[in-house]
Length: 66
Image 1 (cartoon, rainbow, N blue to C red):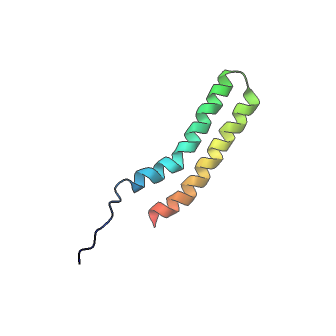
Image 2: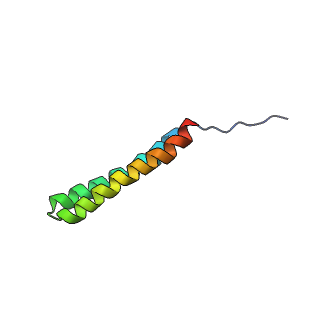
Image 3: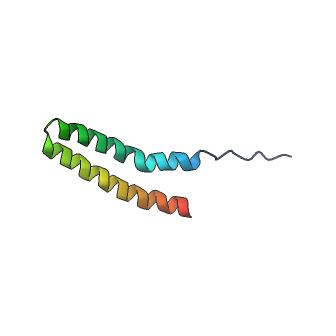
């Protein structure tokens, strides 16, 4: 009987996209709002982007390292 091993080449790339992708999107939206003179909403989105990045690097970083 032959066992077929799964191809997990793109798994690290997907985890990195999940870690960094939403924070980049929030930062881009915050930059657009900052450009359109909506300073308070832009500041909230920038803070959310940083918090998401810190939490995702902590959780996914532990998953990747172990």
